[in-house]
Every structure is written in structure tokens, then in C-alpha cells.
Length: 340
Image (cartoon, rainbow, N blue to C red; front, top):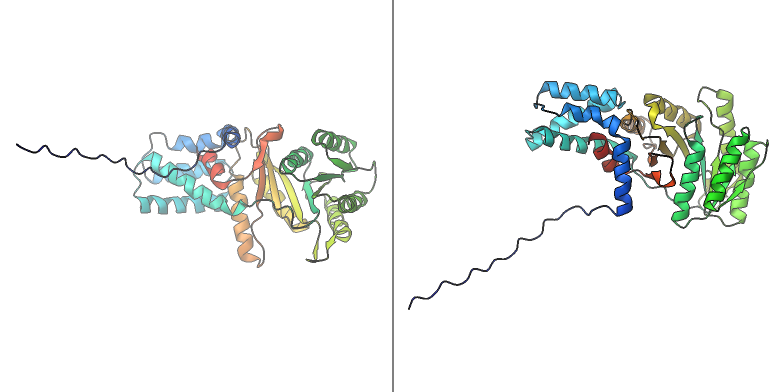
């Protein structure tokens, strides 16, 4: 009798490795970021509608990037990188080119991606500067919440002594986050900062956050006051073991709506204080979110021309007024939200 053929054994194909899905809280943040950057990204996305892969596409894309305030150096760099990627990958569809654009933008932004390090110094003294209206004091409140969620004990220093509303606003954030505050009505800002650093050391705090008065970089006498605050903080706290004087971090809060003016602020405050990080606020509803690309290219150029320097990282970005609307910066997430 004929022998029946053996039953074939069907083995499932090995699973394809996929990127892990973001945690629910992070996914919610990504949705808010995409919504916030929708106005910036709409012009870029429109370029790819019924597009052909030709010179006209690249010309329209360059215009869209400039309208998003990436600046000329960043736009030119991104376009050349994109053309190289399109050639290497033999991309033939608008969808494929747009995916490669995400890669090109993420690579430009990558130097800005760096976590804020807490714990190397006790306390870690963070001085926060910014122009009026950038959202500096509100960002300090949100940052306090973020640090508290990470288990850090925080002391706030209300060194914006010239504006009573600033002290009151910071006091509200201190109450909301259940942290201590050092404040002094009408006192010298440097003295408040000095007292706060000493109090932070005496009370064993992990972080001392020093709020300073908002000012324009053109207000030279006020910029000199900022330099004085930084010097006095250094006198209050020098790490004997490492010889590292406070402040250990000098952060600038910039309004994402101001576009290229934000880059001018970064340059001016860096010249005066030596910035170590940025907090970018108000990215919700802005048409100028591409300015982070301009800041990244400036940082790369500075690192090349000034030995020993590095791009100034973006520690946090904000897309709203709620506490959870301030999050750590991720280059690829931002590129995806920007390009769509």
C-alpha cells in the first residue's frame, strides 16, 4: 500500500523585533507634543502631499524648514543629509522620504539630548535665568515637581527680589510641591542666593533651585547682576573634594514661540554666564518649533571653534501650563512630532 506523505510541520516565523511601546504616561506626553507642534509641522507635512522626488520637493522643503525657524545653517545641513539618505536608501515615495527626514532631523537634534544629573554634588545648585515672560518661574515650579517625583529634596531660592509677584508665585509653587523656600522682600538677590545655598547644605537638601529676575540680554547692568549672583553662589559652595564651585547647573528658560530670537538669547546668556542647559517652554501652538535645530547647529559650531565646549543641551521642554506638561527632551520624539 502506498505510504501517506508525512504531515508537514509548520513552524511559526520568529517574531520581528519591534520598538517597545511607550509607557502610557509617556504616550500621553507624545500626543500632547504632536498636538503642540502641529502648527510647526503642518507646513513640512504639506510638502509631501502628492509630491514627486525632485528638485522642487527639496526647494519647497527648504522653505518649510525656514518657515519653521530652523535657520539657514540647519536647513541646509538637513537637506543635504536628506538627499544623501534618499540616494543611499533608493527612496522613491514621499512617505519614504518623510521617514528619512525624521532621521535627518533627529540626528541634528541628538547633541541636545542629555539628562540633568543630580547627586554628584550635595546639594546640586541650579541657577535659572530667562527673559521676562519666558515662563521661568512656572518652569521652576514644574521642575521642582519633576525632581520631587524622582525622590529629590528641593529648596527654592526666591532671588527675584525686585518683583513681589515673582516671590509670591514661587511661594505658591513651593506650597504646591511641599518644598521649602528662602525668600527676602526687597533684599539683595545675591544675598538671598547665598543664604539659600548655605541653608541647602545645612538641611541636607539634594537640590537648591535659584530663581533670578527676568531680563533682556541688552540690559547690561542687569546681566552684570546675574554674573554677581553666580559669583556669590560660588563663594557659598565649593565642593572641596572635586574643587567644583556652584552653581553646578546654569539653565536658561526660553519661549519656543520666539523663534530665532530664542537663539539670540541663548548666545547672549551663554556669553555672560556659561550655560549648561536649556528649558524650552510654550511649544504648544507654536509655528517656530524648528528653532531647536538652529540651537543644535550653533552648539555644534561652538564646539568646533571653542575647544573644551559642547552644545548646550535641552534638559526639558514644555507644551502647556500643567505640571505634567514639562518633560525630558528626546531628539527622536521631537523630530517625529515636528515632521509628522
